[in-house]
Length: 170
Picture 1: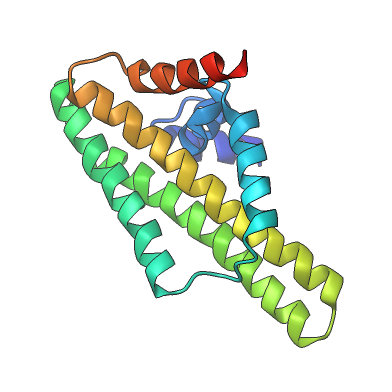
Picture 2: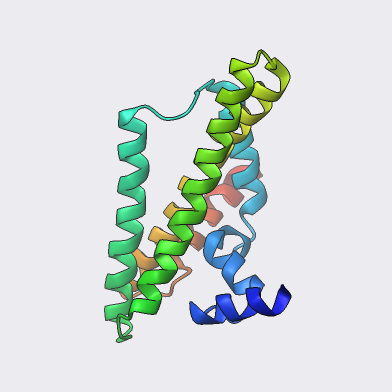
């Protein structure tokens, strides 16, 4: 099973499980994942959203599309070829995200229908948490791409945001 997973990742030009994970969650590369996780958890606690309405779904899709478009643009700036492997990688990441969101929402609704309120609440919370976290991870990727497009180092905008938060801590 491990060999199959490794071959599958290499097919999409990920050379390790870690590189795949960093592609799904680039905040771990910048050590901002704790803040994002806490922010996502707080947002879930404050805003009792159940699933996504049409506006929310359109917003999430817009983030995904922007991540794709800025990723392609950044690759062009870096003079990298656009390949089906890279587009397939995006498709696989998108499928993973949507499965996680859809499964957590579906499980929440199923438990709710069976009057299993604790399980319904847990999966509802997980659904909102995943939506917030996935959106934030993609926004970080967009910021990386926009930095490259504007001729800066990939980490430039993320570092500026981190510095703002560091300066407010004191």
